[in-house]
Every structure is written in C-alpha cells, then in structure tokens.
Length: 254
Image 1 (cartoon, one colour):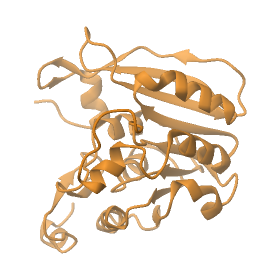
Image 2 (cartoon, rainbow, N blue to C red; image 1 turned 60 degrees about the vertical axis):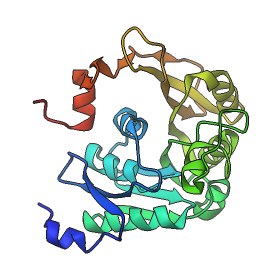
Image 3 (cartoon, rainbow, N blue to C red; image 1 turned 90 degrees about the vertical axis):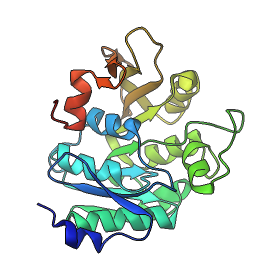
C-alpha cells in the first residue's frame, strides 16, 4: 500500500493524487492542466503487450497509459514520450511514487522526432491518444497545455502515424484512439505508412447514441483484413457505467 504521508512529498502545489484502481497504483495530476480522460483508459484496455515486448506511448501526458499497461499486461518495458516538460515531470514523479523506475521511462521530446530519438524498429508496440482536432475543428483552448493536448498544434495525425510506423519492428502493433469523424483520414494515412488496420471498435456513450470514439489496432506490414468488434457502450444510464467499463477501469461496483 502507498503511504499517503510519503506520497504527499511527491506532490507540488495545486496537484492531486488519483487512485488508478490497479495494483494500488496512483497518478499525479494538476486540474489546471490537462487531466487524462476515459479515452486513455479505454486505449489501455484495448492494447495488447505480450511478455518480453517493449512499448512506447507517443504524447503520454502524465504517463497514464504506460502505468496502466504495466498493470494490465505482461510487457517487459514501457516508455512515455512527452513534449511538455511540466507534464513529463508529473509522469516521472508518478513512476517514482509507484516504484516503477525499472519498468517505465519517461522521456521529454517531440513526437515528430521520435524515430530519431529512439531509433528505427525499436519497439514491438506503439500507442497514442493524440490531439483529436486540427485547425478547422472547434475553438482552441486559451490554456496552452490544454490546447496542445486537444488540437494539432505541435504535431499532426500524420506525424503520429509516420513516427509510429518508423518506431515499430516488422509485424509490430500500433494502437490508436481517435474520433470517428476522422476515420477516412485515419485509414488513408495508416495505409500510406504500411500500418494495416486489423481490429477496430467503436465506442458509444449510450446504446442509442452515435459513437464518439474509435479504437484501432494496426499491424506493420500486415495483410488487408479488418475485424470490427462489437460496439463498446459506456453508460447504462446517466452516471451508471456498463459492466465492461467497470472491468476496464478496475472499479468495484457498489
């Protein structure tokens, strides 16, 4: 169990400690910056990292995906790449708080330069929960940290996919969460960089609502064959998750 008095020593003013409901892991967040959302948690539940494999998360924010993947999979090692030093600092402190320094590295760097930083074909798995909006999609948040997380200010969808392809070993896997309204663009860009979509799942807020997220697994150099899985429904009714969502989060239902 984490000693909460000791844990307070990892926090800076304005930060909070959130329970991840997995392995007694906790994560440091700052509500004045961009906090992780359901999309990151669902991506961690969709991603497969097998024994002996090494994984990298592009645009890791406060490190939520590497920490959850370490809890949920048998992967050997996890890396998070983050361009914002303040977010990376929180991620590093979360890693240290959970005593995961031997399993997780947090690196400050630009997604656009990822393959130069780590080398070509250096990972078995790449994950990303990138900014969903480009310059033509909605208002840009005046808060710089939140704007960078939501809009393609520092990197584009193509940057993420290009670098994922370069980082992956042959037959390596890329896992992405994004918005369905950009699916045509996503599929075309994946194909251009030899990342073949193999598995896709649409996420619906309610059974009778259109999907607002899409989860995609790609195989580098794979043959053309896509399996569309059963839809993932988030809410049974307002404020009540479906059973599968409780399982993905690790919550105990009351």
